[in-house]
Amino acid sequence: MSDQYEYILKTEHVSKRFGTLEVLKDINLSVKKGEVICIIGPSGAGKSTFLRSLNQLEKITSGKIFIRDELFLHRENDHTVDKLPREKQQELLLEMGMVFQRFNLFPHKTVLQNVCEAPVIVKKEKKEEVEERAKELLDRVGLSEKANEYPSRLSGGQQQRVAIARALAMNPEIMLFDEPTSALDPELVGDVLKVMKELAESGMTMLCVTHEMGFAREVADRVLFMADGIIAEEGTPEEIFTNPKAERTRNFLNAVLEA
Amino acid sequence: MKKAELKKHSGKIITAAVIILICIILGILKPGREALMTQTSPEMQKMIDADANSTRKRVTVTYNSLFIINYASLSTSGANVMSERYVGFLGKVYPADEGAMKVVGQMVNYTYRMLGVGENLMHGAKLTITLTTLTVLFGVLLGTLLALGKISKKKILSKLSGAYIFFFRGTPLLIQIFVVYFTVPGIFGFAWRDLFGVNDAEAVYKGAFVAALIAFALNSGAYCAEIVRSAIQSIDKGQFEAAKALGMSYGQTMTRIIIPQSIRRMIPNVSNEFIMVLKDASLVFAISLMDITTVSKNIMTSEGSYLVFIPALVIYLVITAFFGFIFDKIEKKFSVYE
Image (tube, rainbow over all chains, first blue to last red; front, side):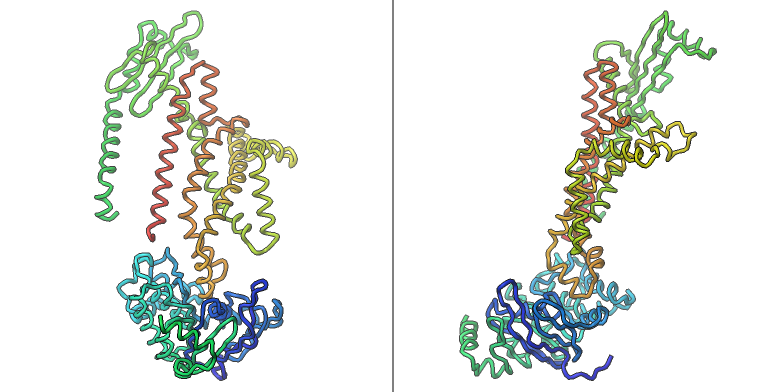
């Protein structure tokens, strides 16, 4: 696999319609390796849908998705025009880890089993090796002593940190975060954000849909403001937070930061 | 079991231990067969002695032992009709030709016959329990396949599974039994007894059992399919998404993530299905098999004993309670993570 690529992830003219509702309209985004991008915006703007369509949890209506400069998927009017062969697609999808708003840990498996499941089952790695790595990851998210607990015994913040460890266990190149702290009690948000911040500092490519403006400001290389299915404004945190150009961005930030 | 758990259940464990202990003591104190036989009147004894040296038996001896209590009936036919009955309980033998002891004796005898203990064939409760257990076991397996078919995105699979379920739920089980037992061999030119050798004296009965099991399992599969389907569809969509995001295939997601979580949700409904099948099992009378209900009805018609249905009800309740307990345990086992 060559590392000679310009963009680790790129979308061109991505649109998504649910029936007559246009959720995404012509989204163009290029992500370089190691970039941390935060997507902010009002609910219903299509932020989550965009993130989910990147790793194929949603099928886009039309547009192109490139991974490592390779055309991963090209669809027009709900028909696939071009795509990589299935195995290659699968391989590239494994490079994307995802963290969900509602954690979605496997409740019938212990914390350690949650983290080990996919590497062993999907990547066919040796169980002992995966377990060792899993323990390191759990240590990294500060939960090594919870390895043998079931998720139901953990707080929301702990569950979310396990979910991050679970995604990292697949050694992805890109991490997608879909509002990872929105379902958490306020006092638990900090621990999760700390883990995400450390991850960003370690050079991970990250796309975060978030309502944590402080986090976006501090950690992001680039902030996208989405509204009504388009990227209304895009820029460095500095530009977006201190000097937003679009009126919508201003209104949104005023509303959010006042609260 | 952990210590704390043991403590929590100590009341129940002690009760169970006491009951078992009492039963064992009653079992030990129960008079043996010899004790019952030596109570007979001199005339009867004479005939028994005479029988011992003759090939032609004139005394019919029935001996039923039900662990804590036993019953013997001796009767002769021909010119000198005699009949004597005895019940043995707690170290004593009671004559059971009249009064309360007669009823007790009958109950022991009926229960014994309905349980089918004395039979080497699948008979009475033995048949009911075996048929029901195997039916639900195969039914759940078949039902899981049908449910996966029904929720499959492949139209043809979904339609076929739907049609199967529609057919088996929409027609009477009794006719399905007839079709499997009579129609299918009729069309394809074989007989169910052919499955067992010509030398097997019980081939007809065994063949009927196989036919019954097939019909019951096919039928139960349709009902279990709906149970499994609703359990699978009750699992949070996020579980599918998480598995997909981790690169798991549909098969891996189903077998490792979704179905294990569905099992706990299926159990109450499978337990219900079990009880339904337990009672439906009486339909096997139609192809000459004898389950609890059929045995009790035969006792009623041949001996005119209207009391026979009381022990029949008790037997059903004991079976239901026992399996209810088992299903409860399975459910708890699958709930550890909640």
